Length: 232
Ligand code: ADP
Ligand code: ADP
Image 1: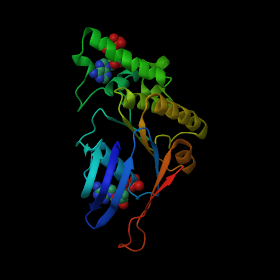
Image 2 (image 1 turned 45 degrees about the horizontal axis):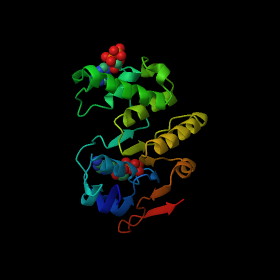
Image 3 (image 1 turned 45 degrees about the vertical axis):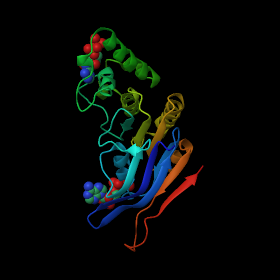
Image 4 (image 1 turned 60 degrees about the vertical axis):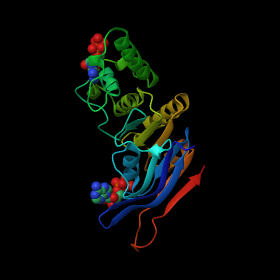
């Protein structure tokens, strides 16, 4: 059964149709890249998967059930910027990944459970190559290291789905190649389902097991929204 399914999903803002009858199924373990021009609806699609937005019509299903209205522990997300908190240390930022609706987790844990949460956060830091920076602040880290930290924060609670919104868009090409290796490894090792929005077509095909192309409606407002899926 698909982990994620869109059934005849429409998203409209007033007269503006952003997604027009999208049907899509994503199986567990897929790495889906999403490409397309600005305004094509890529971020709207991610918001649907995060439960931050409901479709105007149609259904968004997570493992066969209606998408819960907020992002639970089954989904982790990394944005291009501002994924980490500047006033928290590196380990503090990973611990934020355990929190729900702003409720601090570590503050309510004592003894063995507290040590277990810290150990899990430290293991995640090691997995992204940041163990050495445990007690530093994000401002002391390079852009690539900050995105490693964002990945650790998104993955510490072991979500099934990792959502990436142009995660490497602000990084230099050399750093980006390192990040590709890291994300591919995390995807394999954690049995993740990944959905990655990117403007970089080469990156989309390099990492994705499938590439989805979103397109804008251009001249004819009555023309169907074109939506293509290409197997790689
Ligand atoms: P992409 O991520 O592909 O650039 P978006 O999903 O951000 O595209 O946006 C798709 C279209 O929907 C854009 O034309 C955008 O202006 C419009 N849009 C997005 N959110 C809203 C909103 N809350 N109200 C009105 N229009 C919106
Ligand atoms: P230590 O390892 O020095 O005993 P703690 O276990 O208290 O420190 O926490 C490690 C780091 O996590 C510290 O930087 C602290 O500010 C941060 N931290 C502690 N609790 C939370 C929380 N609930 N949410 C986010 N960060 C936290």
